[in-house]
Length: 270
Image (tube, rainbow, N blue to C red; front, side, top):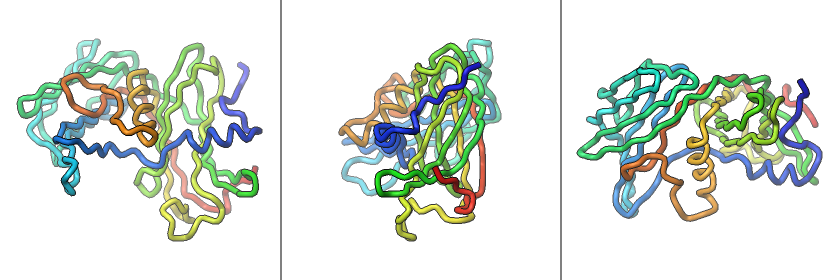
């Protein structure tokens, strides 16, 4: 099996792409002229979690609010069915697990509204390594998180990667792999420059707990998250993933994680 990297490590064009390929955090904090529902529904190989919120109005300083009292059903093409009705501050959860290859349909009924979506559960990805490296970009040394993971062979694959620091989202990215048909994939996350101030939120410190979550997602989930990533460049909300008029997304995915304690002594030089 020939191993390839999806990212060239030797060109400045790669560096520019890398700097714009990841986003600092994932926050579905929409503001609308009138409040709308936001549903963030996730089904993975470990559990089910759905958050139902309402957006804040444009002239409101209040944060989005969790909505209780919804009835949520998730049915699978394999005949599985689960219903969630109990919640705390708009968070509905269960121990129900997804199975790879199964299509799941979700129905959310809340306050007279009905929202639907679907997602096909993907296989569990395999993380090969997670490390931090210094790279020289022109005259500046920059710190990157370097994630390596296996590609699923001979098919187009979609991945979502979320890097957490001390339990809080730090960087995220989505990747569509239609280049490698068989090999190793790489994603780099630009963390900070060498001269980042100590008080800067981007500054990594010795002892920080770092966790990488890698998800194999379907095309519909990728399209939504990719459009969300582009929101910083255009004045619009991401594409619709639910029918019925709500914001948000439903994603069934396989998930793998890797954790480490950050130390500057362990950072490699490249």
